Length: 340
Image (cartoon, rainbow, N blue to C red; front, side, top):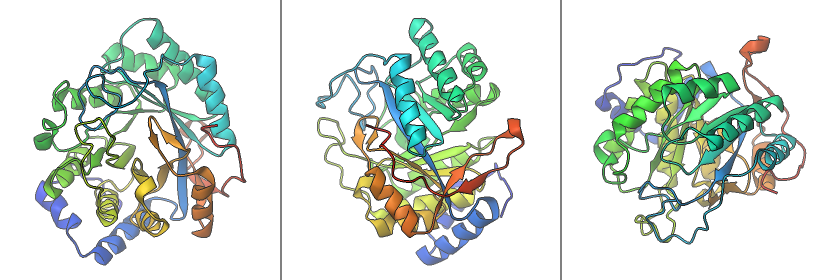
């Protein structure tokens, strides 16, 4: 149950995904308990540090400058603005602070240097720092590592076969190359995808097989359900079946046993029972705060209430520098929302 494999076939992944649901949940829970505190979930906060006017054409994203979504572009936030949000996130119980910029790639210059200062500041607060800035060069990945970046998010989004249906401005191979640069720089990789864009079950498990076959496997795997935003090409996509999200979490847990499985976008459409099933399936991280970049997220108090009712605790990340293993502590008391 703790063996890491890097030779998964799509057929093997599909066989796991298609197990009877209760059997799938049982197997995923066994793997989860063998590798993680079973009652703990990491609370992460995500902030858009530069919003909209992106040159890419990702069909799901309202931040694309090519779509007609009613989104007002915003400049890159100042370091002080970001650190103020990070402090509030920490006070609310978050242990990881993620910063997203709507760029195709992170270009050299004052803005990138500003992001490096943000990373240093977030780390100085005692939080894990994560960024998603688009494609990186080797030099940029090394600079982020030197600044103390804990993790870099670069999602695959879907399978290689379906990818061209949703994005034409960046290739699948370019995504894989960025992930490799991040890993070689010594930064943990955060990479997952989105379901509900019109892909097949085969596409979904093929994406998981690609992620599981990375060496090392990603430290975090975000599982997103499409939020169909008016004005984007995918605005008319039907909502994802909540049980399919449960299946994806369980399949990811089995194939990537030591990774954090992050229940990400789309939680606003899940009832309490569906979210608890996702935790049973091995999800052990959520984005915490009323906003995910540009889309909604559950209320902080609702999240804390659900987690408390389930008897869960806040996961404390491993700290190799201090020799501290992964652990857990009681959930935070009522606090100001990270988004306020």
